[in-house]
Image 1 (cartoon, rainbow, N blue to C red):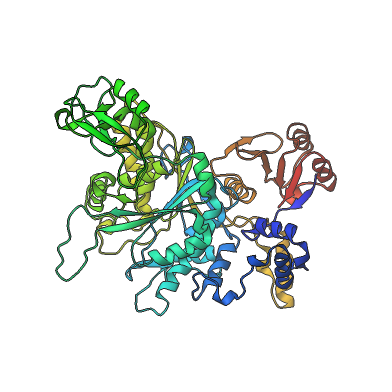
Image 2 (cartoon, rainbow, N blue to C red):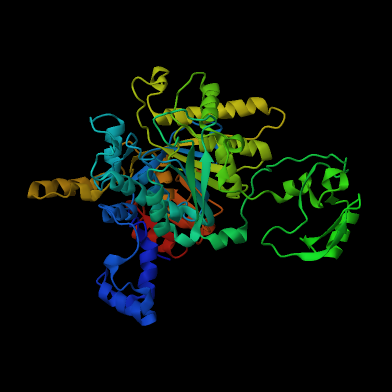
Length: 614
């Protein structure tokens, strides 16, 4: 075993870089990549893998793309802190609501939720010219975030992006690109991402999704009719009634192997002949135009002779006829049709199409009415999505028991509400992670008039109200709905590099600071434990246990992590505690303050477990 100094997270994609080093060690020297050597090595494998002229390679290029890529690989600088008392049924739920800038939150989730999310749904700004987009940079993202959200500065975290801007499309792409890069890492191999979008950026979005996810993993473009009424604007040639939902798999082959989901049945079923098997519908037995079939003669009950090509051979037809599955319309004189029963289709499910009507998948007015019913007043949030729409996305993504749905543009909280409703309907426990920045509501808005100063407050309140409504409607068969709340904040671990100066005086001051605690002011043991969980790859729903004795130990466990993490944050660790660790926690991970262990104790512990010090 070894003793390691606990370091802040490194580059997000360190694992991929390491794999590249293993495959092409010749291309690395002094920790840097020699691209000329790398090209030679790849050319040795297959010259066709290299573009003859990289400037002419197909793809989307824009101003700021390189910086956007760097933002995706920048390590996190903050942490998440648990906010007790702001959730519902907090101790018995895996659902998580996070207040914070979604780019930094996505960075923080990379280790703990890598390849763990079954479905991502986002409804980002559409870039209409009136939307606000995120202002990302490399300068202390968490400090900047905390400063702006506390309104200590006139600037905000979001900025308008008017169509007159010379970088109108580039600004939007620079916002989306790093977030989508990070999102892909979080998806399971059979995971799916859905993105709502309109015509302003649909084509650019498809190009960057093809680049990030691969064109071979494109699953479809859903056109959803968002309006239930017909527009009546004489100034427009084409009225807008639809939006789009772009669907990509992380790996289409893995998705097919694990199984795609189905939507609820559409179409009309009835039972005009009182078939004991229940309601049914029918389809032609005659082969359609362009279809191949088998030719033979069928005589209807009224004696009409049909000599056609049929969908199945004559033996199959006779078996279906005997089983009462052949129906002749027009009082027995029409062409035969094959019956299929509703109960069979319900068991099989129905494949979704790329056209989603407002009657079956909801519409904006219905979504507004739903929020009005929940909050008791109109216009609390602009253009919310209906839960019916999101529930069907969850269905076709085949989200199962204990799977996680992520939405990092949570808005009014429709995704969380939809998960609650669907769990209530089929009594399964799917989980969600929602992320929402505390964007200020307009001063003259209905939301502000009713006390909601920012959108995060609306998200949180909607989740709480939807739980209350569902609990009231299902008292006989309650489902344990709930969520806990986390907030993006500064790291609890002190950054010593902050105290390096450029003079003898500042150097002496820096040396004096070495006697300080390794933790920043205001830290709590729980805060540090959660930060270490994120560093070491433990999800936020891990089991956390406190053991009191000679020292207080925090034990962190999770089914997805093969070893436990034991944490002690006291300044001195006694012999009794060391004996306990050696005897009961062999091969697990132990983290403590560096000065809390003697050199001899470090050696003893490192012989049986992995030790990291702060």
